[in-house]
Length: 263
Image (cartoon, rainbow, N blue to C red; front, side, top):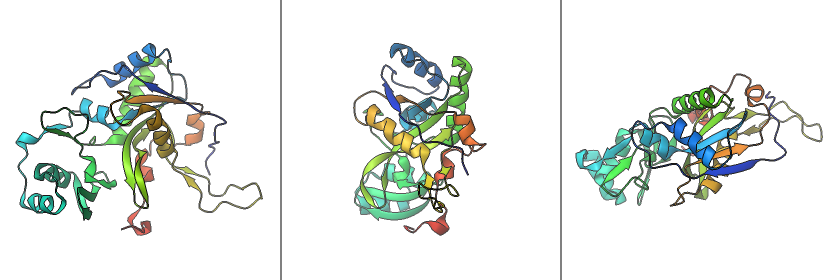
């Protein structure tokens, strides 16, 4: 049973001033510079939320479509969905299995175990020269590296969430989700606690990293705002709340197939 306690209040500060990111960029340094511009230095137990796109760009996950040769399965799926066959080829390369197909969308289980549309392959905010962006190879590892770099340079203990906008099986609209996390419990297990009437909670688990991602993306925006990161502040002792589960990462949020009623 987790020691996590819901905070009385939270603040979300979106960070502007982060420049266009290229492969090999020093994300930690650029984010710390943005906190200086915002006059909001990071402190212990802050959670730094970063858009997946800037992590992918820094890690060299931008792919030129000019060099992508579609396979026969990609050409077939492109005809069924109306999507560019080169994009479909990238989707297939990034996927373990195709689960559903519809107009302009291919729902897959990707190589990281995420169930999402188009394996996260995206062309928004990646330039106009015919390129696409792939998700980080290992988003949890990316979050750990960024947490360690920020902590070492700023001398503080922080959490990091790598956020992306994903759809949901039973609702319209995309919402921020954590695809990578470090320094905080991504999933908080409240089972065994008592409610206010003394009943034992039997099924209550909180997708904490997803909730943080969703809150941060409201301030960061998802269009042309140019605010690819945010500081979420107000948590107590994240290390105590983690109870050793901070290294489980966002992978802890992935539902096992045998309990997934939508597959």
